[in-house]
Image 1 (tube, one colour):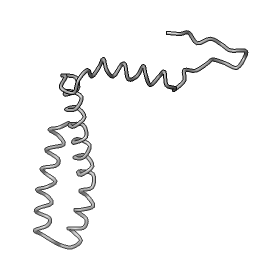
Image 2 (spheres, helix red, strand yellow):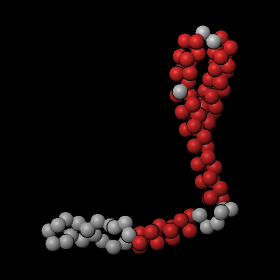
Image 3 (spheres, one colour):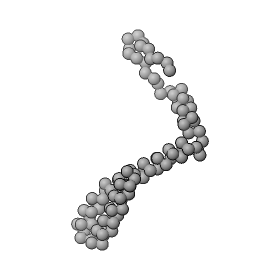
Image 4 (cartoon, helix red, strand yellow):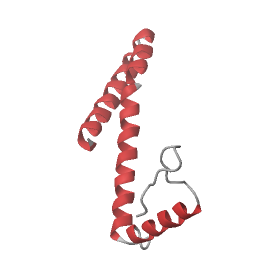
Length: 98
């Protein structure tokens, strides 16, 4: 790894985001993920899928209170019961995935 040397009183030379960086980054990716069916790619895909699903569930749980306000304002008992069921499923999923 090249050393960062001070240049004529201007401070240090910082690494650049150039074509050489892209080539090295792609080389590292080829080592980490050699083929689409390798174990590391499948593990990364599974982790990404679970994480995105968890974030979607957390978002849905976060917007539940506004749905409850609407249902309670309309005095819709059947809508309230279905919303309570949905809320229970989402909260259980959230606790399971987390």
